[in-house]
Image (cartoon, rainbow, N blue to C red; front, side, top):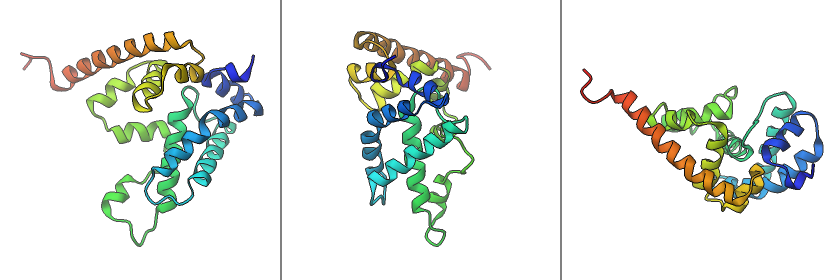
Amino acid sequence: MSLRRASDHDLLALLHDGDSPAAAELWKRHYRSGVTAAAAQPGVTDPEGLASEAFVRVLEQVRNQGGPTGAFRPYYFTIVRNQAKQDLRDPRTTDLDSAAELQDPAEQPDQVIQRKLGQGVLASAYASLPQRTQAILWYTEVESLKPREVALLLGLKPNTVSARATRARRALREAWVAQHVAAVGAPGAA
């Protein structure tokens, strides 16, 4: 299998099996975006260093049988954000609002995303979707990537990505309605 044509999911599976070239391919695909995400964090003076450090942390987690198994980039961005917060942490200047934002080091990035989104209706709706659907929504809606870019990351054809993105948005709407009805109770139920 050509690593350049492999999906992120396939590369992560190879990486979990100890394949170092898979790590290099993930680096090529995601490092520049990681630098951009790092530069967007408050107080970051070395976005390249932060992105590199976060990437190494992800690799260490994978080598320890943890880390992402599906979509790489959301996980990587969570590590970038958490590392930036950890680097800024200063007990003399931390106020109550920022203290609530700081993450427990034992907390996994997926848990951070759930915590950040809260236990709200949207978070529950998103979490109820299959991982592949979540990945397509993340890449197309959050990162605003074009279908051809997402196709490379997920090992799909661009037309397939477009079709799945349409279905994913519909699935999220339907899941949101279902979660909302469950949260507030069905009309007339009392």
